[in-house]
Image (cartoon, rainbow, N blue to C red):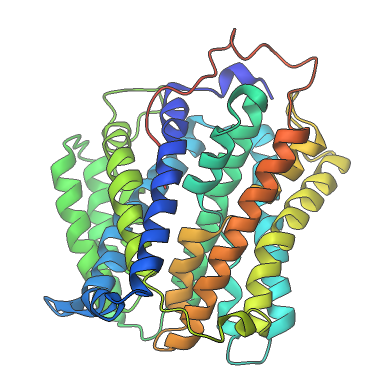
Length: 405
């Protein structure tokens, strides 16, 4: 992998502000937990459950605001496929294989402990990686880790999230309305025609179509956030590297800051309003909790390292020139920070089961904290670039601007 070709200005925008975004998420999570378990806890929890225009505020956050988050994920995935880490199949294979292992092993661990039980639906919870948190932790190490490690982590995390999106669409649809689904797909097809045939470059028609598609998807029973991903691939994208005039490029840049500093913090506030009962510690030993904990903390690094090692051994791909296996292990450990996506899938997996949702969220927080601390400690001790690696300063690796979730 030639590092110089990978570090685009867009990627630098993607990694900048990681520290601030991660710190803000942590602060919001701690604040939400403290308020929920204080004298104001009852009113605070009721606020998120109060209804506006037919949906609770929590649902508006999870179904509407998070659709914008998924729109950004889709735009980032599109960028990676066109001219990022995934644009060259030789470079793409390592993060793709790593993501596959990082999805499969945690899922198998949870299924092994919960298969055939009421908590089997939680199999998707330990699958995904929180890009904002993982890159935020990695950014704390600055140039003490190789440049390719940041790219590798971002690429497999995006692929992880794509896997989670597919799981959401396929397995967490409760009741399907075919009419509304077909109508949503018809809107998507119309947006594709606007892009590929009519060559419409203005963003507004696509955004208006996206709102309509979101509503139809919501009514169809398929989770409405999927509309955000579909919209991303309908918006015109230029294959020119860092094309500032591309509608997709402009929208991605515009969304980085609000997603990182508004949408994800609000999501954290809404979904960590958890009243922790006296027996919370006992719940950690339940099959569901162990499946989540082991899936994220153990399954992620094991799956990522083993699948990557197998692929390299078979000659399917090779490690970037400035990476060693100790770096891949560090990335795998940080991959266990599930946070946003894990909490999101928990809400879908255990709809209406408040007790299981609460215990799952507590374990997700513990697992993500553990993965972040262990990953940071490992890379701080063992993550220094190889002696023969290119000089980071000469390659201008220091990030300059925005980070998504």
